[in-house]
Image (cartoon, rainbow, N blue to C red; front, side, top):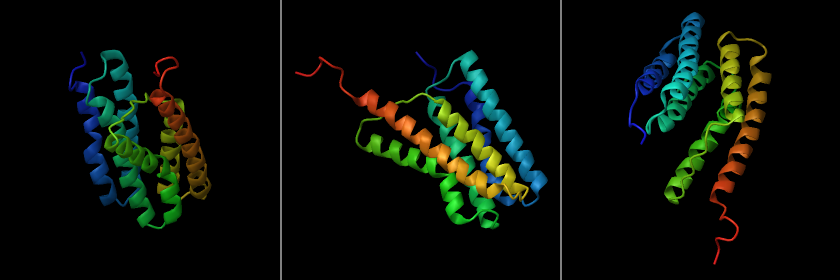
Amino acid sequence: MKRWVTPVDVLTGLRVPLAVLFPFLHRPAQQLAVVAMVAISDVFDGILARRMGSSRIGAVLDPVVDKLFMASAFLAVGSRGVLRPIEVLAVLGRDIIAVVGFLGSWLLQRPAAVPARTGGKVVTVAQMVTLIAAIVASPLAHPLAWMTAVVGLIAIWDYGRVAARLHRPERGSET
């Protein structure tokens, strides 16, 4: 039986104050430091969860905290005009669709626990790279935002395909 909370969950939860803090930081060096702390804690909590075992809350907490940080960071960067609002929306598209999908499945009482997939991890890395480019006002920020959006759409398609398979009745079980 899985534990409810582990020390790994505490490490994950430490990213929440960083998400709250990010919009109040206006110097690129400060923002980059927070991005580095978030990225490092995300990598380490994943490694530790695989070694020590995950908890019931950790399976939900990690993706929620990741989405909270990305939303906070991209809305802050977007408010500075580094990315256009449509680009912020595009970069966060995978997260928005995932939240809507989760809420829909929960309301329909058909939640599907889809394990982390490679596409989702690629989107997270692409979001981080796009965020860094936006923080340093790189001319690559705009193309990276659109590349992240495309990768996000592919990841959503992949997750949707897996979730649909989980809800498909097994052959021979229909009467």
